[in-house]
Length: 472
Image 1 (spheres, one colour):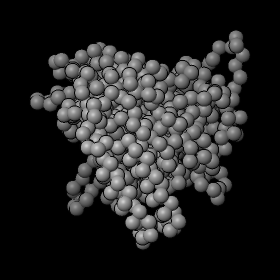
Image 2: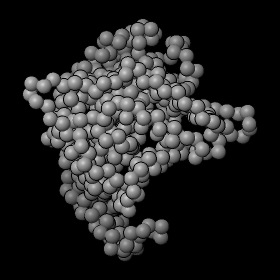
Image 3: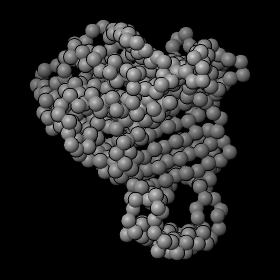
Image 4: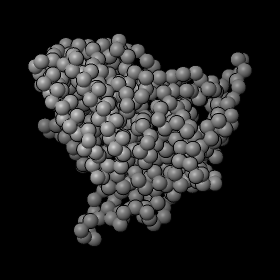
């Protein structure tokens, strides 16, 4: 069901961009970045103070049409600094940073590296691949005989190189954060990895030094906390004895100091050890609880979007390297850091524009009120869909990473200012009988609330719709 929803959302968003003549090239070519940059570049005199766009105190919108309900009574948040346009590309985790992260997150425990293939195993693999050289690709595979053989030759060459340093036995070595190099076929690039674990925790890092692929770090203890049924942390949110919000925040800030790059804690949720679809925020007997900190990068004083990177791997163009939106999420309990999930780290080039001229908010308001009902109209959804409920909870002026125009093979792009509409999306569906209904969270909605998700993303300079799933 969730997959179906995102297909509908993507299709709708791309159709919305078709207000201009339909291009013959791939959708990534629809938006003229040079024109957008020219349109948005503003020049502030040194003595001229920055004036944020005028916005109303609240964003309000109510809409009802058949099975679709939209309600918005949301705060509007804008930074007090000029919104820039900045060149960015994917980055890995430098070795020195990885040493610092590993020392902190391994918590002094001995973790063992993932076992390497022995010389005997590699020799057998090389023998098998040589035998397969004349077999040709499978019938379902669309590669040519030449492409098939060239792929095998690359695998054999890589295995022969690995053979030189391969161990005689499969004994696992103690990790210290030092990278091992592996070759990743689908990115055609070397990747630096640390994959280690013990009975208590696991540490996994995949890092592409030159941004040829999407890097990520995932460190976690074996005791589990579900991300569902999150409860926003407020003064009235109950916490169990031993879980202190101030102490937990200190753990997260220590991690941000180890990273050494400008991040801030943006949102905090209470999460539990068990899935709970009741919607009741009270503490349950026997359950364990932790705090989830959603952190975001700050660039020239402006915040990046909080939009989750998890969906960033969906891409309808098979020839485009996936590129997730950056996410840094930390879960902390009374004993310390439970897990760290850092996806899609960025590195920054020159600012294309230090300040940009943004559309008046009334134009953004008009675009949103027109487009949200179109994007979420359930008429094109599955037959089981009976109702769709959209709740807009906040509207924020932030930076969003978009891909470099006409470039689908390199992870390069721009940070551009956007208005992000956050909230929840709930779908009511029926299956076998007319009375058997169930609610599904397709974007953070009840009953399995994981935090607010993106409702709509509007380019604050030219008013075009940006699809963060695809990065343009």
